[in-house]
Image (cartoon, rainbow, N blue to C red; front, side, top):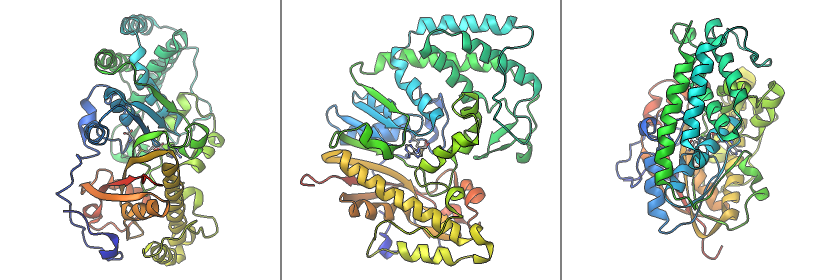
Length: 450
Ligand SMILES: C[S@@+](CC[C@H](N)C(=O)[O-])C[C@H]1O[C@@H](n2cnc3c(N)ncnc32)[C@H](O)[C@@H]1O
């Protein structure tokens, strides 16, 4: 069974949509990654399950090809592509995610013995450290409450001192990723799933924590995984991680060079990847102040509500005849006008920016795909100000408008994790909304004669 096409939906209806039982894809977001080699290194919101990627790769590519993930996150698609012997290319705008992605795909070249001897050296350095560390916390990183308690901070700074002594850049990056992927655990903040103070979520502050042990634990998992990766990945498959917006694709990719796209762009739920990774971005030195975050925010797929809510009404850059998109945006804009930019007009601007980026993205897909090439795009539907927006169905139509063939829309996941993002950030109507959220795989193809 498949969900009805949007033509058959009452778009202003608030009843639950039926879950789909007949999808041929596995769940794109199962939690199994938490225990799988390499995938377990860095948690990422809305990360793919490796199983979903693996199944889809086997289904759509019968021989080695070029696999692209335009929104690579922490690299699930790229890792699985390389494991299956494909050449992989990923774009990722967030420098922390891009670093994690690169360190993971480059793990094929890490000498495990060398890693183990750096771990041993760290153990000695950390356990014998005395006096004031040379490192200091990133100056521009301001938080409401102390990010680390004093005892934890001292240990983190010793770790930074050690990282500065590592000569091998690949190993240095691995230590950085081990730190960045664990730092929230020993901070006074937590993901709920947006980053907030632990005390606001009813959790006690972390006064002290075995930071060095946490790093060594992470790295010993990494050492095992690297050995596994080296034994299982095809060494001739290439992997390229581009820390830039996919919208700059023409600077990096030739037309008609990609066999399969597998990706999940940010959803229309205003999950703020940049704000939620501020600690990692500052501590890793990618960002020195708010001015460095701005360009990331404006180039982010779909923009953010915060960056467009105050602008004059934003229109769609394209028309989508026969759909309710324009009407939905009009209704959205007319809601809660007494709240000014915090009412419907701000959300209508956000939704219009989002769909404009969908159009630009679809045009990019059409350009980079080889004739006959397929794109699998995982998107979730959304609820904005109480209005159900069938993002997947609109995206499918937008892709057709951009010249791609819409092959299918399948719903492997009827209720998705992360609906609290909608509750906290999008402030939609609270009642029963989790029942109506799903994730869909939009299957597109570039026609042979396009
Ligand atoms: C849903 S996540 C993808 C997660 C990925 N499938 C995984 O398994 O890790 C979407 C990603 O798109 C990235 N992103 C947002 N705008 C982008 C842009 N313009 N170009 C490239 N990446 C972008 C975000 O930083 C985020 O990591």
